Amino acid sequence: MTTESNGAPPARYFHLDQLPSLPDDPYREFLRVPSLNCGVYRLAAGQPDLQSPHDEDEVYYVVAGRGRFKAGEEDQAVSPGSVLFVRAGIEHRFHSITEDLEILVFFSSAPSR
Image (cartoon, rainbow, N blue to C red; front, side, top):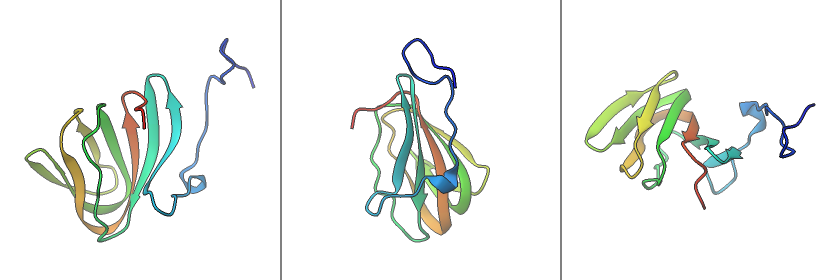
C-alpha cells in the first residue's frame, strides 16, 4: 500500500457490517480527516433520536429502515435511498421510526468532541 507524504494511506476501505454500534451510542465514527468525518448512525424502531444541532453542514444517506426526519419546519418520510442535507446549527432529528434505521453520516469537517 502506498502512503501520502504525511504517512497516511491515499484511500481507506470500510464495510458497514464491520462497524458495530457501541452499546450506549447509536453513532459510530469510522473516518476522520481534516475536511470530513463520516460515521454510521443506527436507531431502532421506536427509539428516540437525541442528537442536537451540529457546528458543521451534514449529509445523511439512509441505507436501511423507515421513519421520518424533521429539520427546521420541514418534515419528510425517509426510507432506503433517501439523502438529506442539513445546514450547520439547524435543529433536526429522526422520529416516528417504524423500521430500524441505518444511516451513513457525512460531516463537512471533523467536529471536536
